[in-house]
Image (cartoon, rainbow, N blue to C red; front, side, top):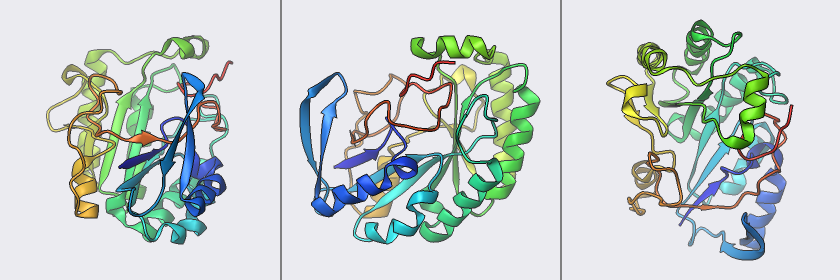
Length: 268
């Protein structure tokens, strides 16, 4: 069993004490997002959990607690972009996030730390040049601290369209996205970082960028010596390459206030 912790909220940043208390109990009760009265108990023991996949923008609160995960396999999907507070309202300053990312890598190793540069959106302030320059700055800081980066372009979910319109944000055109992807690939290679793309059609990319598998059965097999299900998770989007997992997070509980977030109603 693979546990996603979590696509629905940032557990390492805001709910690490809750998560660790669940580990002590050996289980967590998870409500169905569409029917909160329907609750499923999920065992959280070394015997039942093949791997935890953590998703975060700020791992600082959990850094000193990682020894409590010694009996478990896990890795991090860690988002670091260079947007300012008009896009990502309450995330720490960029230099602080870079420092925390590198500290985490020193603890768990570069193989278990995936850098996410996503979502990529375009506004008058955040144009093609901004993304190239920002990606270069972050990639140069992460050389040797991660082996892999995942990119994706913003999805204009209905619930975030008002926010996107307010900041004049748009999805890059196919031509711009393809050129940007080509440029980011060259930068990533220069710093020894592999690049893949999450849920993007080929026409938005450039040859050499792989399809991302954020819940990565291959990586989990390498980390654990076990072979999890390699079939696609049918609950995810058509272009998603993730293996099946159980998410233990709760929507509307993340405090970062990112305007592009699908998991929380952040109305500008």
